[in-house]
Length: 428
Image 1 (tube, one colour):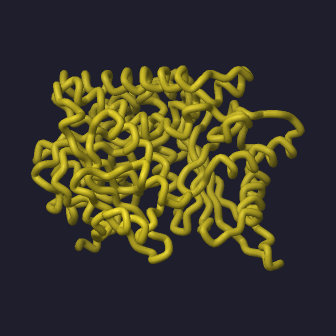
Image 2 (spheres, rainbow, N blue to C red):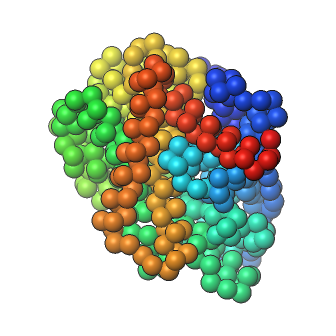
């Protein structure tokens, strides 16, 4: 296995630089767009249940808000880094632009492991995060959302703290809230369903029946679960699912040749997406090493976990049967692997297009909160599918016309939109 380590921010900048050259952006504009406009690094002291105080390091980074308020999730993760948050904020800028919603890119993170924190400790951490940032957030400034290991309850604690500080009601300042407390119907499913809306339209454009395809997934958190649910509902077969096992601090791949029962797997996973190994074995799943998800003889690989999972070191393990890589995670493929994917003739459906369903529905939630009128679930998902399909078709059309790699086509559309907004504002 390769010992190469990948810096996500350097990857994001490398991806930007290549497209900036194609678009012939001037030097000043390149310098502005290849780095965040604002970074806030801070610490959060939290009184623990045992009476001791722990101090957590945290970030909020805004990449660009030329097209609208910053938008981006808050991660709780023990291995969070500033460079990861920088990269994610940049990818959020392009993600909002490629689906043409009026928001910019931002991201947040706290270095912690919520598995080891009680609910009361998590609440104090959430409120501490907002106390440090209240003057930097708001429905017209920067709008956070849940991300890895955060959820609707965390968002509601943050909203409550913000409203205590500001003395008003501002439900649009944060999204991903519980339904009934300003949350949007359809938000839980949105990112995963959005991935499949893109995949479904690609297959239709190429006269491929989804019922004739099979897939292997990495991850079984919220995104991967709803990817798998919709994919199997449409007739596809999920052969294998890989996920992290917290108890053993390692990942496993769960496989069934006849196809995984997604409802069954969902019923035996915890709130962090870990499938109960013993229960899975009782249900007849084959237990394989975590990395084996990428080795399966399937038509579609769907990385839906963390960044930098498809590298040149693991690329040779990909079956010759694989025809599509559908990126549900952020940055799961390293740039040096893109070359190998192109050479093999695998179609890549890029991350910031595929997984933009989440931010699109977050935008819908923000709109509904700001006007204090909420849509039913069918209306939300209908709007979501229309937005995702329109975005995919614009990218696919450009890729076909110019013979471009799909990631490059998506970047060209997104970066061009942000560059034009930045220039129109007179920033460059």
